[in-house]
Amino acid sequence: MAKQPMLKFVKIERDMPEKREASVRSHDFDEIYAEFAKAKAEEQASRCSQCGVPYCQSHCPLHNNIPDWLNLTATGRLEEAYEISQATNTFPEICGRICPQDRLCEGNCVIEQSGHGTVTIGSVEKYITDTAWEQGWVKPAAPAVERAESVGIIGAGPGGLAAADMLRRAGVQVIVYDRYDRGGGLLTYGIPGFKLEKDVVMRRIKQLEDGGVRFVFNCNVGQDMSFDEIRDQHDAVIIATGVYKSRDLRGPGAGAKGIVKAIDYLTASNRTANFGDTVPEFESGELNAKGKKVVVIGGGDTAMDCLRTAIRQGAESVKCLYRRDRANMPGSQRETANAEEEGVQFEWLTAPKGFKGDEAVEAVMVQKMRLGLPDATGRQSPEVIEGADYEEPADLVIKALGFEAEDLQTLWGAPELEVTRWGTVKAEFTSGRTGLPGVYAVGDIVRGASLVVWAIRDGRDCAEHVLKDFEKLAAIAAE
Image (cartoon, rainbow, N blue to C red; front, top):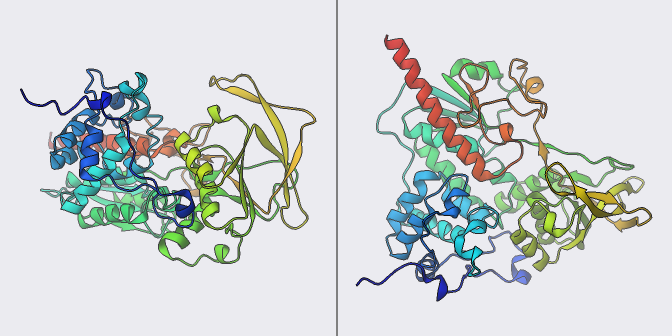
């Protein structure tokens, strides 16, 4: 009887790739987790129970065939594991690094529910595709047959890139327009290198370029090129801009110097630390935490990125203010633990009331909170504790309160583009079709601020429907 390669969760404990010591990793922007060795990846994959109803797969937005590629990894069939992995996910090595697995696949692992510790799905996923790149199994997105149809994609973030990949593989002519000087969107300029090293993103951009996708960088739609011009040049247009408008703070002194937006701070850091760019605002100290008392306001993953970046820049102290408790924070618990290990202090149940300082911020006026009754989402609403205010010294305050949609109708001179009351583009889920003929929208600009994996899912789904719509138009034209 053949030896059973799976279901070893009873004998083998959960194990993550080695994590660099906080005292070492907090001084650089390299990824903090090492790569699994072949034997360790096979060992950890073998813990999968191959359950009849794979909740890991159903709770993955991409519905990745996780049990299948874990089985193939455990049995040494790694190239097949890669083929299964990339069949449903355009960027598996990116998702393996930055997906909040504790809230998605791993958080719903059956053996986790039974007390054995989840399979380390994300780390194995990363290992599979990193190995595929090393072995040359990853091929350009080049089609077998070229098509005449052309698609313009506005936004080179994960949603736009996923759509570009699928469309190009089908032979469609694809041009991606982006406001930045490099592709990747928030993958490049929003997420720090210690979570996602930039060569991982850049090799995907090159793969798309090698496959025939054309990129037009430094292109601000509405300024350098109108929305109507892009529509006129293509058979279809996909809006994949993401949401970049930062939610703001109110209260006395909220406009003081030294209070900055998270996206500006992270972009400056990524440019300087990962690409060696010269950023005047970083050089002047405006977007540099070195030697400063830093306070980050917010409890999501963007806040964690800012906190951990400030540590690496040599801040004197780094504190996080969040109005709810740890159990109710929206960010990854894994990222919170990493931040604490690196020296971040969390002040739970606190919120800013205002700011002190004449020319520049000197302190945050903080009000203590308690959790009251649940709100419409089911989360307990924070309530102010009267008389418990205090001041938190700060000379750099980073606003990480989330993102909203920009006013595309005004920016693009496109009042005919329908938007919701939140400013997001009104589009059909799955297909991405908007009310304008041949115009689609995907990712955060439709959903609101969400996860990278959802943007990838939206981009792939939209590309599939664009191809179907092209086929329908071709059939009509042939009648």
